Each structure stands twice: as structure tokens, then as C-alpha cells.
Length: 169
Image 1 (cartoon, rainbow, N blue to C red):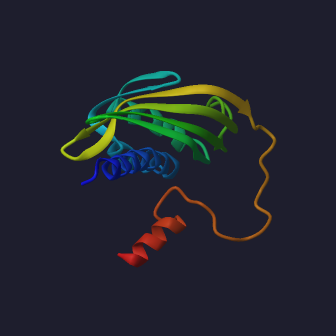
Image 2: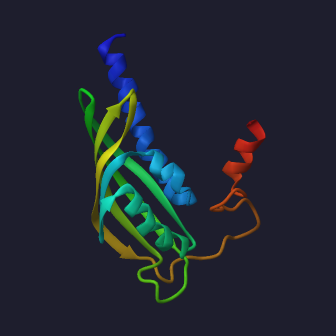
Image 3: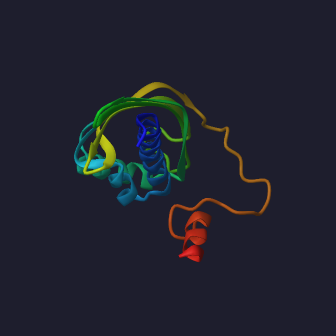
């Protein structure tokens, strides 16, 4: 296969790892989150440093206590180095809802996911991640209820994505 085509295939696979992580976090699908990492991966988030199992144990109660999150990936640059790669993806994520007293809720933050990706047995995944928080702003008092009935995101099997997937299986 032509090397330029293989580079494109590898870069796309790496981008899908980052997007898989975002979908998993936003849908509270921690098996999906885990699939974005190698089993011995390390994660560094604001307030956390540890392995993937520790990260999931740390983040699950935080995300389960709030109404939802939505991660958007913007600029994404991938540098290939054989079976290793550097992935830098800009992210803006919004967190909303939840009870008082659980810490910061209703906020948006800008961050960069700086990932050491590694290809093992033909599969790209995160070997080490630095979630570099660049800024955070409070959105308290800015959220409003939807203007009318319609589809709503859910963090379980009743989400429209899950329903569509089930209909096609």
C-alpha cells in the first residue's frame, strides 16, 4: 500500500479514537471510554493522575451526578512516528445540571487532549493522555429549557443513537 494512503488511514483511526472517547464520556458508556485506551494506559486530567481503571472509577461518579456533557473536537493534528503518534485535539466541553454541593457544575471549558497514541497488533489507542485545561467559564444561570417537544439526548439505551443502532442490527 502506498505510504501516503497508509498515513491517512492511520490518522483517521487515531481521530476515531479521540471521538470514541468523547462519545463514551458524553453517553456514560465507560466500556467505550475504556476501548479508546490500551489496558496499561495512563491519564492526566485536572485533579487526577492514574491508570485507565482508576480514571474511570474517578470520573464515573462525577459525570453520573450531573445532567450531561457534550465534548466538541476542533483542530486535530496527528504526527506519525511509526507505531507511535502524537495527537493534539482541541476540545470545548460543556457540563450541565446536577445537585448543589457537588462542585463546579454548569460550566464550559477549553482543553487540548495531548495523546501519546500507540499501534499494537494493528490497533491504535491511547497510551498516555494529558487533558490540558486551557480555560473554564461558569455557565450558571445561562441554561434554559428546550423551547418545545422533540428528541432529547439520554445517557442510556433510550438515546436516539442507541435506538437507531438497535434498528439496524
